[in-house]
Image 1 (cartoon, rainbow, N blue to C red):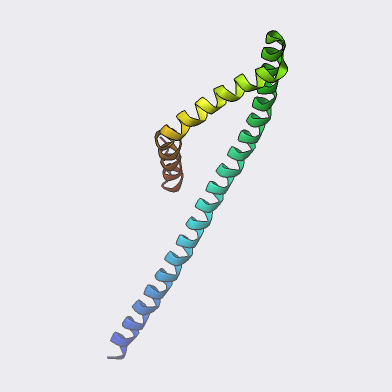
Image 2 (tube, helix red, strand yellow; image 1 turned 135 degrees about the vertical axis):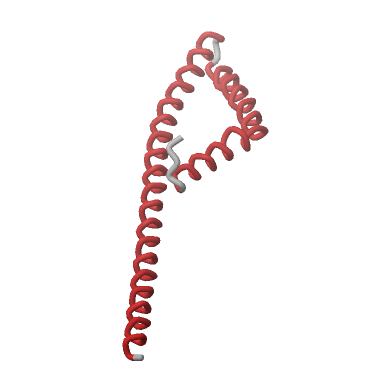
Length: 116
């Protein structure tokens, strides 16, 4: 009977060790995915910031050029503002398909480590 008890104790210790290992593995996977999502977010924010600086300079230059061409600088800025308002309304109308769904797909690929 002592031999059977020793087997059960040994199996119990193995099960506890396995569960502890699985928990540790899950924690490490969670940390790895969190770091991956964080680095993706940070690098995306840097790219967006640099793009916005470039875009701001381009828009100001274009508005000044249009304003100079038309004889009044403020008219150039109003024209550029109208173009941006049009694109803003368009983006609001289709944001689910252009922003939300692609972002969800990208984050899902990162989380489940799919390389598509």
